Length: 492
Image (cartoon, rainbow, N blue to C red; front, top):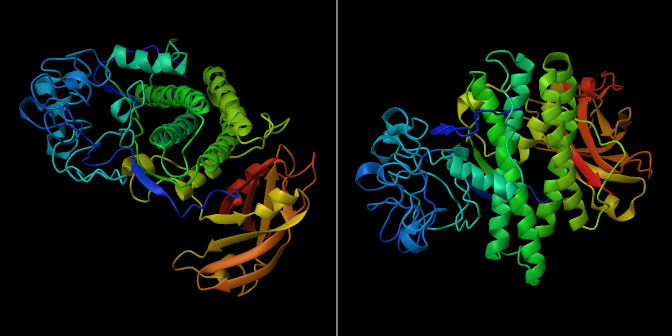
């Protein structure tokens, strides 16, 4: 994952889990857009200096094109300084002061000429952060965003100065070695890079949203101890910047191979309080760490030059997960051998729990070859409290147009399916399905989670439903046969 072309102008390089159904929804891309505002150089509205309006396409309106508020309305720049430089204070340069420059001055070539912001903005200042048709908003952080350094719009690498800010916040840089030869990476490797880009862009959204909620003191995210708050924010801002660099680097590699970048979607933020948000970050990091094991295995067969940088990312993700666990009073290192996973399970979890349906660019979604399985929900609070063998509850919804008979099962009977647990680097374990109930499309059942400290159940456990005749001695086979899942159980 090397990136020698680090300073290119005008280049977009870019559980019991909390209650998934109670979430805020934000967007990191899509049409149109409004990013809060205020008096004097507002981003998206208010007096003086609208984002995207006015002749010349200045970012921030008015002559000088400053972005944001503050003295002179600059966003991340010096007094009177423009965001991204260029004639007339353009963001990212380009003819006529357009955001991102390029053909017809458009940001990502969106409809409506691509002036950043233009068209209709969501001027109500609420937390929906929904965009409107006309232009690609490009992926700003949520409203009220005071994150430093300025998050590059749509993960834009517009200037060396902007990238340098991210690298300072991340305490390190993008790799500066030579890129792989154009067209040299295996198809499987390119697929992995697309998934990595999708995941990293989501994580940029997640941590920028979390930082925003903490800084604003949103309900459930207020911290009375200002010293602890400052320490947490400093840590999360470093993590955010590191995830930005991961996303930028993955997209550099994709563009270098001539296949195009991955763009932001709209996302859900399910956590309702700080501890749940940190626990959720730990869980999805666990799953990513499992999926990256498969990525490394395939790189060994196809593109060994990428093994080292991907391994460095695995180490970074493990370090930050140790911090998440310590924050919630768990031991920092959860297991001697972390639970394995697959790209299909990681892709499914991302789609099931975080991506707003139909919000991604279709060409991005269509470029991902991994199946997104129907969701399997798990409840295991009693298991967390008892830490002993306990029945836990599962549920799933039969997809529209299907019946249980399509899965070899009858009403109140799941004989055509079996439940499989994957924990650590051990052989998958089959759980006995019991207490099946069917109400409309919803199927509920329970199964014994045979917790044994040291051998089964600590850390991340992945649960999936597969056909009853599936051979279950290999997690990769289980993944390929998955019908519903993954349900994520994360305890210590």
